[in-house]
Every structure is written in structure tokens, then in C-alpha cells.
Length: 198
Image 1 (cartoon, rainbow, N blue to C red):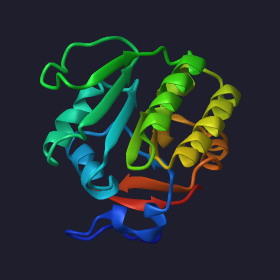
Image 2: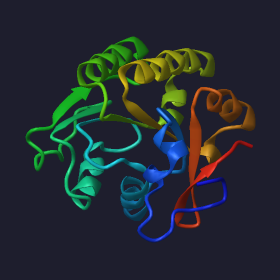
Image 3: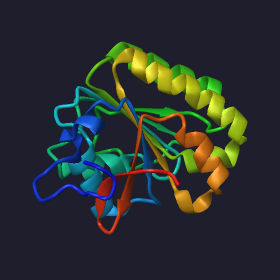
């Protein structure tokens, strides 16, 4: 699917060769409402994932599981990483929950790396969001962290989606970060499509 083309009815963007070959995907969007989240899971996430790791500082990570329930349920092995321990995952007793501070990039990096190394191919990392991460650390430090992370994702055969709200950053910041990723997708006019920056 080229820039400017959206997935048609019943067509999954995850079936697109360019997106399917992308280990690290930058997802440009504001906070996803329930419809956008379900659309994201339906169009951009490959089916039959073996494991899922959600790092969510923008929202309660359990909301991802609620959306996943509408798509047949989350993978059997699911780990949620959050800033503070919250209630709300009681319906998912088999889901592991880990508390990591956004500014503690060393601790976060170890947690993510260990899981991806253990899981390997067929696993998905959802990082929500880079916008929140940049509220806690400077751009240069975030870039170094992400540079290591994207290479770890590739080395383990996993896939990762990194969410960023483009309305919250200047062009320089976005241009700096986009250089790290294999492709960019954006939610525009009710559908997901491959994009470019600027």
C-alpha cells in the first residue's frame, strides 16, 4: 500500500509486503479512541501473534486488551509495562504487569530486551507513546535508547510499533526520530495508511 492509499474493506494493511517486512514501524497518531484502536488492531497487527508486550505510559495498558477482545483476544503470552500499578486488568489474570518509570531507560531497556529475546519471532512490541517518553527524557537520550531498541527488535525477529503524536512535536524532533524506523503509518480520515515525513 503506497502513501495515500488506505486499506479497503476486508483488506489488512498487515498483508502489505512493505509493512509486513518492516520490523520497526512509527505510528503517527494522537491518542486512539476505541474505534481507532480496533481499526489499528484489525489493519496493522499481524494475526496469530505468539506474544505481546505493551509499554504504555499514555494510557492504562489494559485498554489494549479490551480492544484485543473484539479481535478474538490477546496472545496467550502478554506483558503490560506501565508507569504506576493500576487496577483494571482483573479480567486478564494471566497477563503479567510490570512497573517501570519512563525516565529509567536502563530498566525499561532490560525489561523489553529480555522479553523479546525470550520470545523471538511472532512477538509484537507496542510502545505507547514516544510523546510521553519525550516528556521525561531529552531527545538525544531518547534517540540513543531507541537506536538500541530498534536493533534489538530486528535481532530477535520481533516486530515493534512506536506511537507518536505529531501534533505535540516540532518538525525537527519528528524528522530526527523517523530516521530510526523502517516505515511510517498514520491514521487519517478514519483509516490507516503508509505515510512519509514531512
